[in-house]
Length: 426
Image 1 (cartoon, helix red, strand yellow):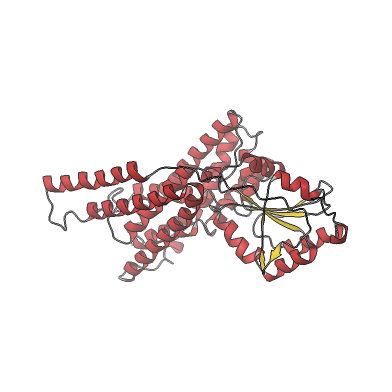
Image 2: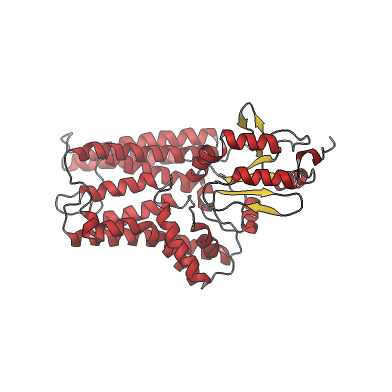
């Protein structure tokens, strides 16, 4: 029964992922494909939808295999942990950048051919499914946490892990399956027309924006020189793709065209060898653990303390509760919820009055200790919000945005009032 509940939660969580900030830009891209080809025969639409589902399931199968291998080796695993690898993040940036340039008309990506060629056909839909899965995995969503925790848990058999990942993939692909498979829904799509050119441009800029968002994560995972070098590589990649897409317009045919292709390929490979590296940034000096009881609100903003297990021990010894935001730069939902539900006048006032310490557990880069703590709390993905109490208990907020945070901070103050806090000796 628990497995069936977790499987259903996975399907529902995967469905909700479609409207999460990290997934929506790529879903927007896929919907533009559906509109562009909405005049195709129903059988063609269903075939492409099945290929799209195949792409999502293939990607989730790969993730499941990796999780099973890591668990067998005794490694800690968590939802989105691969986003702590700068190489993986760089690959995602490149993918989004390439698809964005394709939508903007810089070049024409040929994956599968139907009629006049171009980026269409079942192979293209399969690639769309792969792409949206890769972009979705940093995100969490309501109902997804239970399924992810069950799939990543030590007690899950390999086939249960695989089935739960497939359930999430099915939920992620469900909107496209419904639109393509139900004629009444597919007829709701607008007809293709001249307006599609503007729509494709908008889609391209949306994908480029998603690439910039992920580049910000990459920038914090590597040194300044490595980050700048990667930008030069993206420039060379863009020039190479433009050259490949305009050889015929330049009048290059036959051997000259093949030479141009080799030159474009050489430019990209050379830039990759010269500029792409993943040097870690210099380690920041550890910040001192606060020994005085002061408000976490400074100059009208929340001044987050970097969360560590040492901080937790020291502050709880003061009989002072801690509110911890488990987050990462690659988690778009985390950043969105912080702006809409935490960095608000209401929460700042609650932190100021209760003197609960606000700390941020940053998982942008690998940190096994923080993942182990999340696992202890019963969570396997981000965001996660918890208030630790000095008596050893904790208050874990429900998945999704922290809608009840103000009330929970006030409850913490009632249980551990500020006037009873102990000031640590310097």
